[in-house]
Image 1: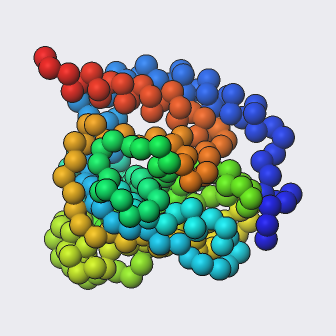
Image 2: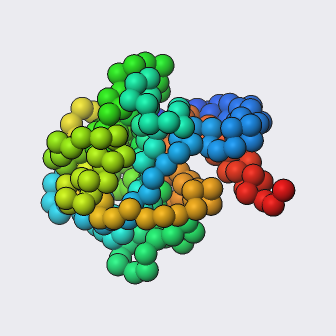
Length: 259
């Protein structure tokens, strides 16, 4: 199905975004304060980064989206709440930076044309309170959702999710299991999309993790409004993120200054 009535954002979207931005500005000082006290990100404080590739799915209902996502990918996996690797009462996250082509390896520094996508083991804002109770935090190779929608012309308004490609029966902590899965070339996800207010998910691309990379975690900052592949965040939740993310990143930059 191509762009049409199902793919259009409703007329009240500007109001929802204005409300979201107001909430974000109200929350921003608290986020900055908690970041300073915790001396790390408020959420997802400890992460591990991997380099890999993303390959589009040719054909299918959303075949116009996949070619935008053909190139390199930088992936950060993390637990949202704890600095330890506890496998209960936790929410997991994936931050993903996509760069078209096969150029120089991605670093902490973004470039024009990059697309950042953020995912968590949270199906929707309504399920956020129970997400720590229902997340299987024993493995990073699980399903993740973008939580809030994107505008992706010409398809329209969509939601995104990651579903694991296969699984590796490996012992140890979840990060060691992921490292071993990467070594075995068994670590990756399907990137899927669906139009909002519909049920069917469509494969758009495949993400493969190839190697772990050591980066400056304080300097690495994913921005949901970095939209080089023309996946543009929309809606109330994304609008809240503008001021909140900026406040957290500014606080982390101050933490990195010499004392």
